[in-house]
Figure (tube, rainbow, N blue to C red):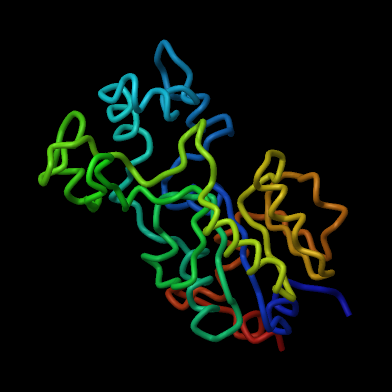
Length: 252
């Protein structure tokens, strides 16, 4: 009997999803490394890696925040079929966690509750002086460098910038989820760079599914390769889809 995505999901008991930028491109958020991604399209005298670094934040906060607003804030974006499907699988008790490299908060907006955000979230911001939080809607109401309404200190986004380490508590939670999974679905990431590849390596099972339109270094390890957009691949589990394939959903 051929292995299908439906049969893998239907038989999973501790499914974990590990996702990258490709999960959110279908919501209109550009990725980083494709031909239409941020690295290729962002213009300016300095590379995006510098503009999104802790060095730029502290040395040139005005330039940092201008770049951050123009390229990383997408308040109009809404969850796509992949986000909704994963949230539905969590409600069914099949999916135990989402581990994401994205900072857009779309998994939570779709309804996912257990989300390990490796690179943080643009929806959370805080004062570097007094640690007072500032939600995204308040940041969007400001211009220039956001200032803390309490002490006047500079506000920064709770995202991992170039030059900063990942949050160890988030890393521990993500690693535990992946190591405890009986099934790991990886989608929207090439796994060509670390730390993404390192997290995938923590999965020691034999039910690895890769959903990516281009080859990855992990293809030989996969039990199933799905070469289509991730929203299309997960659409049968999207409760908001106009038409659904009942056999695909149940795996029957």
